[in-house]
Amino acid sequence: MGKVYLIGAGPGAPDLLTLRAAEILRRAGVVFHDALVHPRTLDLAWRADKIAVGKRSGRHSTAQKFINKRLVDAARRYRVVARLKGGDPMLFGRAQEEIEALREAGIDFEIVPGVTAATAVAAELGVSLTRRGLARHVVFVTPRAASGARDNDWAASVLAADTAVIYMGAGLAEAISSELIRRGKPGETPLALVESATLPDRKALHGTLVELPELALKAGAGPAVVLLGEVLQDALVDRRRAAVDDIEASLKQA
Image 1: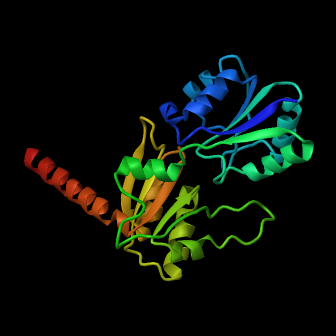
Image 2: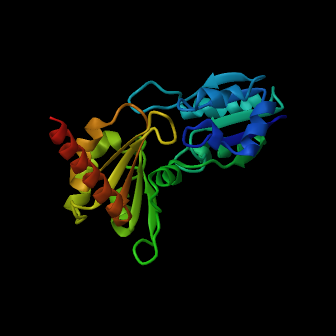
Image 3: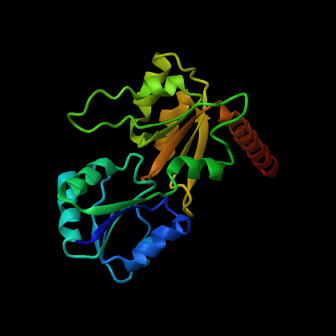
């Protein structure tokens, strides 16, 4: 029997991979990887068979039960099996389903954490998710729920927290904005929508909760995270001041 490693690939940039993850990838005989894993990260697994099993919203994706079976079968053939997931495998990565399948089959496994998008986005924006006297509660949520899953009252968690990080929410921007405002969240609450964090084509859009649908339309097809809370107020003011300065400079040149 081999061993299966559930590895966090981080938010995108290959150099944010942990040293342990890189070492395991170099030893791996096979890698089952998500759709958003960077090609240079996959290059570390130079001796491995590479099998894409990623899931993207609105696109054809590999069924989770099939992935579970492939991991079990691979552990009976390879000494080192890598399951490479975007971000951290234990956060919105469906890792528990794979863990349970491996346990049931008697397969040894190990979890290798990764940098999750929330902390990567906060670092790039230079905005702490917590701040003394302003933000002591942080929540990570996703409004998406699998078919047949129990009710997902993500909005209740956002309303109860000082800072919220919303994963996989750009495509539901209109619903997110209207639901939170309907339930009492001020429309002027500052937010940032960040697409393709840590990568060269990163895009950061600042605005308020009521402006979220408009911001989402300006985003591309890359993975996006929404940060919401008063910790973003200074960043929002700075961005708007810079926009005004740009307009004034353009008018002077004209």
